[in-house]
Length: 285
Ligand SMILES: Nc1nc2ncc(COP(=O)(O)O)nc2c(=O)[nH]1
Image 1 (cartoon, helix red, strand yellow):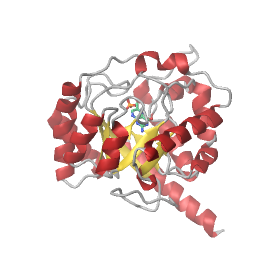
Image 2 (tube, protein in one colour):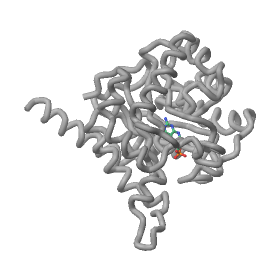
Image 3 (cartoon, rainbow, N blue to C red):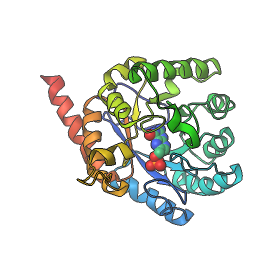
Image 4 (cartoon, rainbow, N blue to C red):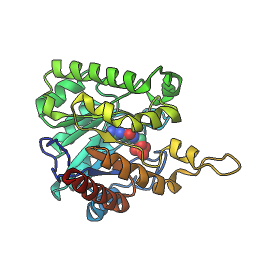
């Protein structure tokens, strides 16, 4: 069972499911499908129907090498979608590195700021989060997409990611963010090679020593495609990695993840319920 209740977010007594709505033309696994606001809103509602506890709305692709989007364009993309979904009672998170976008998103009803940079990209972000009081995802990050791959060098990746996350936690707490607002994320695929991602998943128990809920974002990512590469060595295409994503969800939920961030919600919503039943039986002994 999840030991954490995060202000403003559901507490289902099991691993939560965060459904992804990328309002972008170029996200790595679904770029362009939800770029139209009306389509994005309908997709967000459909994800809730499929079992999403939270809907994560993002307006800027974070795939390796992606160019930055202007502030105005990011706001134009996400604000109407966040406002409409929140008005329908959906627990919405905004996937942004920008304090100004976070501020507008919270005013439009967002209950969580999902900051892949953990407050490093915009130094104003922690103060905006502190003032708003909403939940805040601090993800492990070592730089923007254009050069993140050059920073994927670790000795013991679990130790180093834990230490760098701890530094980010201390920094945002010093800016007034409260401990209970914080959710941590190892940042799979962000300045990580495939073996680093697997080590972080296998090291969930060590990451939990940070004492905050953990969110895992493995959905459709390149390291899954590489694992499933065919005889020619070609990685399996992103959109064909949902089954591997489901396996990660089941294992991560059973190992105590607070939430999984996924594109294909329905099967993952089933998997977290299977994991909860399994953990309950295990705890009963
Ligand atoms: N908290 C969190 N947020 C994220 N946002 C975007 C992506 C990139 O994936 P996408 O392009 O499929 O959204 N991955 C994460 C992640 O792993 N964790």
